Length: 265
Image (cartoon, rainbow, N blue to C red; front, side, top):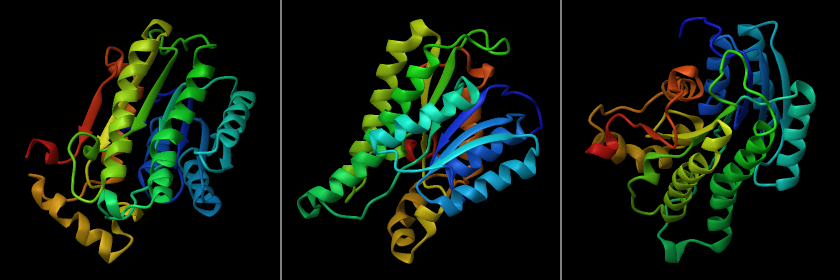
């Protein structure tokens, strides 16, 4: 990615720790000229690594960060308040935090496991998106983005579009994000807030490569995709930045699939 100041505003990113999609999105924003960040993750150690990576790319970057659980309404409210107090605005809000869950059919799935998946993936995304929109609706557009008061990008999944065995709660949580995105896009178009989502396929992250069991579970999906490989977090980040940018000024309520062709095969 070229080093251009495409993003003069404030980028808020959840699930920003580690080496997954959220961290890749944060680094991509920094590489593209963004200098103000509000980042969060449940893991303080990996979040600190992302802070360091942003600072190495852009030593002048100002970073507001907080460790916490996005399924907790109190934490989400305090984090958005901290971001607003620090920067007085949020321009790009990207919601990457999520979990995979275990491979089980519905009758084998405990209610607590269903709740955990949906509380983080769907409810957590809704809470952060809701809070970001509440801030965006109060602010004026940037001069560089005259057609948008803010841009929301939710991270869904190819499994929000098509299903796979043993993943009913996960598939449902990601399908919910896609339809939530479309509904919010309708509701907030009149406020010049764009709301879109990205639907990644199997991406090489700690969540998908962290254990032999998960890798074997996902192998058939990799083989089904015509490109027959896992994607990279950076490839998803490129799609996210496009949807946040002025280049996507007429893109609204879209679910951008980044899956190597899985859903067409």
